[in-house]
Image (tube, rainbow, N blue to C red; front, side, top):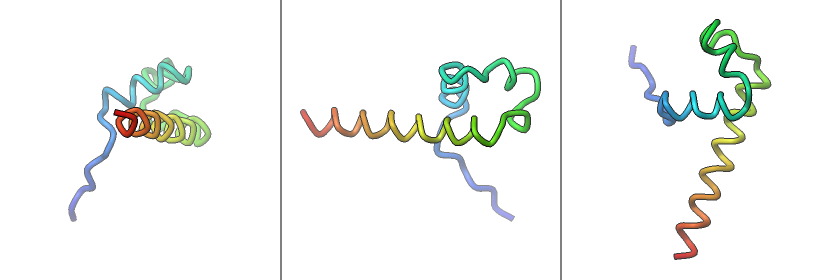
Length: 60
């Protein structure tokens, strides 16, 4: 069985968790301890950041 490689680095995920306010939960309970809403918000924020970076890149 092959394991799927994640797109976001662990460092980036932790940075998003800090920005979104659930880093303490993550430290105490691991990824299984965060809510579905927190995970969804993390994905939304990552998409927003990627879109912003792409827009800035296209303006050059």
